[in-house]
Image (cartoon, rainbow, N blue to C red; front, top):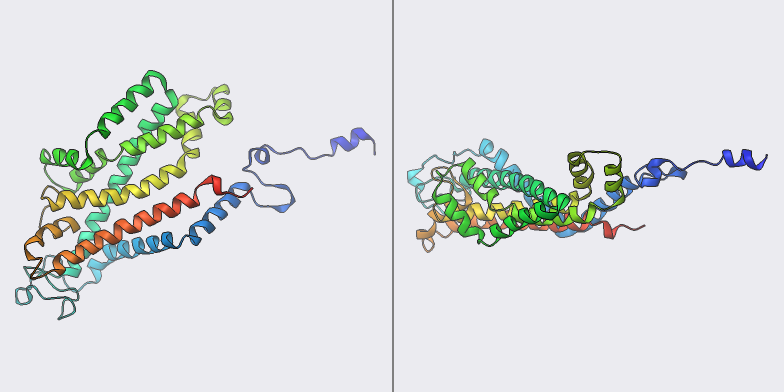
Length: 313
C-alpha cells in the first residue's frame, strides 16, 4: 500500500463529531446524549429535588382529579356540620364556617393557585426572554435602554407594584395571572441578557452571522437554545414566586374573589377563626408551603442537573 493510498483511507472527522453533538467513533453514544444521561443521574441523586418533584406531582394530581373523586362539592354547604374538625365525621379534613368541605375546597383552590402560578411563569418567562435576548444581542443604545427600563421596574417592590396594579383591574383569573406575570419578568430578562451577551461572540454565533443568517435566526435558533438551562431553572423558581404572590394579594382581598377558592383567600377567610378553628388556616397554609418548597427544591435540582461545569469530560 502506497503512502498516498493509505492517506486516502484515513477516516475524516464528521462535522457532527467535531461539533461535539454527533455520533462518536468506536460505538460510543453522542455527546449530547451522554450529557443528558449525566444530568438525569445528577438529578436523581439530588434527594431534595426528587422530594420536590414528587410533592408537585401529588399536588397537581389532587388539583386535577380530586374534584371529580371527592364526594362533596367545594360549594356544597352542610349547615349541620359547620366547623367540623378534621377526621371527625363524613368530611375528611373538616368543614369551614359555612359547612363547606375543606378537602374539596383545597383541591379546587390548588387548581386555581397552580394554574395562576404556571400561567404567570410562562408569560413572565416569554417576556423576560424576549427582552433579555434583544438587549444582550444588540447591546449598545438598544441594550442600555432596555436594561435601564428593567432596572427601573426592579426599583419598585414587587408586592406594592402588584397591589397597585390589582387595585385598578377587575379581579379575575386572567387579570391576576397577567398582573403577576407583569411583575415577575425582570429577573428573567437580566439573566437572559447576561447569558446572551456572553454567547454572542462565540464561534457558532459568529459563523452563523458570517453565513448570512438573519438576526432573528441567530437569536432564537442559535443563542437561546444554548442559554436554555438557566432559563428553565429561573422558570421553575418563578412558579413558586407566582403562587406566593397570588396568595399575598388574595389574602389582602385583591386577588381571586369568593366563592371561587384559592389558597390565599382561604387564608383570608380564616383570620377570625384562628383560635376556634385553626385548621381553616393551617390546611391552606400547609398547601402553599408544600407547593413553594417543592418548586424551590425542583429548581435546585434542575440547576445542578443542567450545570455544564459538572460534566465530566
